[in-house]
Length: 135
Length: 282
Image (cartoon, rainbow over all chains, first blue to last red; front, side, top):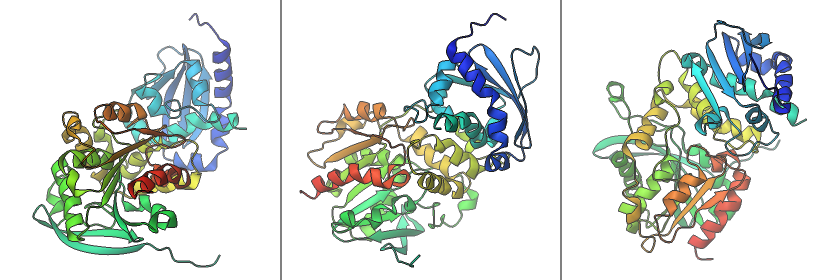
């Protein structure tokens, strides 16, 4: 696929690569997700990032299109949106996944039962790069 | 650590609400002008515990916080197991007025947050002469829904966890972590279907847009304060509501979200103390 790789996209995708280490190194977060096995897609603009969770740990993370890959759900936003979401102190409306969805800056689709049953886990996982931004 | 008592006293009140016997738990602290505080949907009166321990407030106000029936330490009424709980404008107003009457409170101030903030608008329109002043926190006459309420009460999703997770994003990212977690803890403790049932008032029964223009602040002063991180009842929602009411100047509280009194009590007091000073005329 033809994807314009912007500076923002490059930054976000680089931080996404660090997500497994960030999550798997957080015992409380892994414990929160200890009953969770799922596969989901994080959209960074046009670039899909496939995340596999097993027992609350991120078992695999792959960037780039994988045609026909099965996922439970997808969360998509522009690279600039992820950067605003990950600011150390995000601005109102950019501070929470549901806030992003409500204002139209992100979308969620797929099996909402998986999302809702583990909502705080997914919120914490996807906000995890914020701690890095805070230093 | 030296053991200390807080000045908060809790009691149980047996009273009829809309003709039905209820056992209601409430807490109070301080003396002076009665200040009745209404908690948010799916929570309980503990949200106001810091207010009740603040001498700058309790030296001048008798602060009273009741747990709504079905919430906190207030029982659901006998027979609750055969009905689906759904708060309505009528039932909500009835419990507040019954509580005020039972305690023989003379022209109290009433401060409510979220659904309590919505109810304050109803009280301003329908019962202005019963109150000395009204304070709406995170208050608007209508808000756009932002999720499907059915997720809050079903057997395959843990109710406490999902209720807390849904509201967690309404808290400001700047607040002390312990206060954030305490605010969420109350949501994790709520009875099954109770948060959802409260939101029946918010989403279905309590659209007050037609009523708001009837509010006459000359009969009862009204104050509206909303946290900037609240995307459920946003500052824009409050401003739109206030634009229809003469004599209301909405305040946006920086660094606060949907639960100002419990998520960052220190910051909240800097906004609410000037309001309380105005109400008591200083």
